[in-house]
Image 1: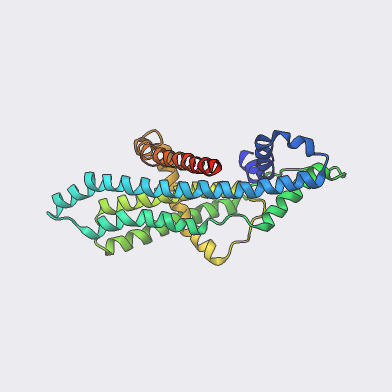
Image 2: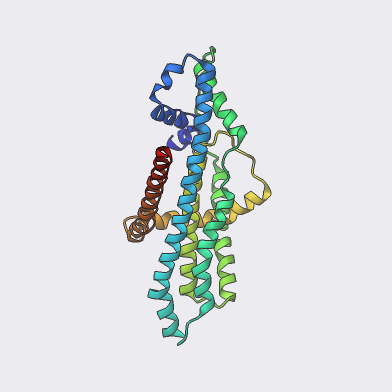
Amino acid sequence: MVRLINKNGAPLRILKRLIDDYPEISNSFNDKVAFLSAYEAQTEKEYKEVSKRVNRGIIKSIAFLFITKVIVGLAIEIPYDLYVTGAIIWLPLVVNLLFPPVYMAALKFSMKLPGHANTAALREYIERLFYDTKQESYYIHAKPSSGDSSALLNIMYGTMFIFVFSLVTLRLWLWDFAPVHIFIFFLFLSTASFLGFRLSRMIRELEMVTTNQGSISILRDFLYTPFILVGRWISDKYARVNVVALILDMAIELPLKTFLRLTRQWTQFLNDKKDQL
């Protein structure tokens, strides 16, 4: 029920934020044009806010992955290489260090904000909800059990997991990755995939129009989904071990907020000086 409501809750989320930001909006409710214009402006504002939040999330996730990987490399990979081979194996170390942050940055290009069609659909929904004189009933129908096909789809789903992980493992093995290196690669790739998926959910919370997936998107989801699920499992298991995230908040978020506050104060100071001239 929660998933079904969340999937169709974008218009009401924006309406709630409009009321929270502008409590006086109720005064213009009787003016249809003014109210819908304010709602559309709030929608565009939400797009911009989500874009900023996603960008901040990408930066923090890249820093999180890089710092954590450096710690793991110093604590596990380098000692392991020195103990087993007597020398540092640079290729697995460099790949495991650089690939997750680069992969996280690349995910940003797949996160597209909703367009004008979505804005129009949101406006139309609110207009129909408040100003349509016809009474409409909304129903949520539970999907019927698919029976035997469900078992077949579960088998195909498990096969997909095995195929994807086997394909990546074989490729890494040909690059002389040891089992420890392969495990760490999967660990950070899955974590990055889940972080990217969680950021993309911010955008989906504002979507009213769903676009049809092309063959490239289907292939991407085919390769992407197993790592998301493993990343979610890792996140659920170790959510309480959040020392690195706390360090990131202190090392990145706090200085950034301080810098922005000082910049605003400096700008205000200069404006005051200009006014005194």
